[in-house]
Image (cartoon, rainbow, N blue to C red; front, side):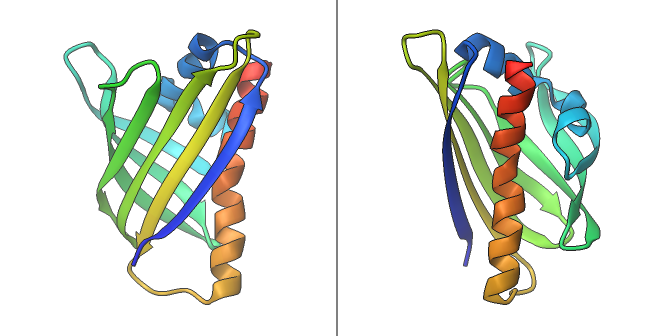
Length: 144
């Protein structure tokens, strides 16, 4: 069964600026602490990354997973689903960007992960906090 988490945060940057940071996947290792490497395997007809492999730190080890990105609701939402992973059965998520009308952006980060091996509750909670930090790291990057 997939574990789900949601984080909502307001970023002091326009939706376009936040979108630009979120879709610049090759730069994630510069600002997303747990992302160690990004490899673009495929792009869509507009040159945007569509199949992307990540190497990340997770629970004290390195993990690899490949995500398929969706842009059909650009620039309001960036969504993804896992194609393959080593310790995950599935990963589904999305960033949703909502203008607040004052030059800021409300960002909602939704994530559902199903791991191959079940984890004790305290380990899941620790992992959830680390994963949700991604949206806080996005905030720092977009406001810089």
